[in-house]
Length: 124
Image 1 (tube, one colour):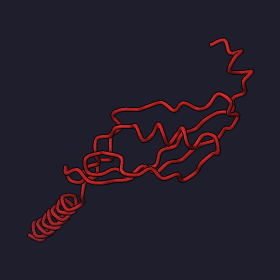
Image 2 (cartoon, rainbow, N blue to C red):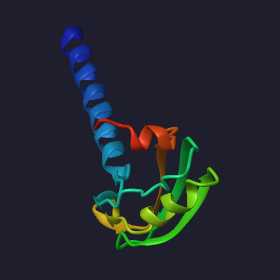
Image 3 (cartoon, rainbow, N blue to C red):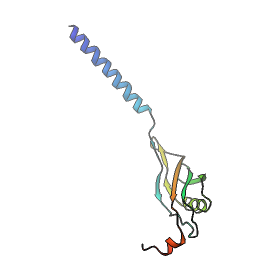
Image 4 (cartoon, rainbow, N blue to C red):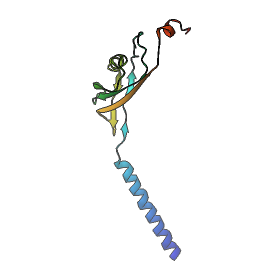
């Protein structure tokens, strides 16, 4: 009889824990980040010898339209063409529990050191 009572208590406790966890899972919101659907490549100036990473924060409305682009980290000759290209991107909006919401995303644009010699003498 004690074994049956102990087993019943263990099962009841396990059921309550499982139910509580299931309730917690249902209560936590599901966030799906925005999806990039159209990309415009960055046209860096040929005369630029700069290198590094430009970081932009892109703000989107609940339709996925870009409302603002903020420079988080810029590089003198690379920031403006990077921002110009990013403003032409298209997104599907972020979703919270299946409903479109406004969002922000950080995008990193690495570039590399180029010299005119390498551009004109490349074999690619």
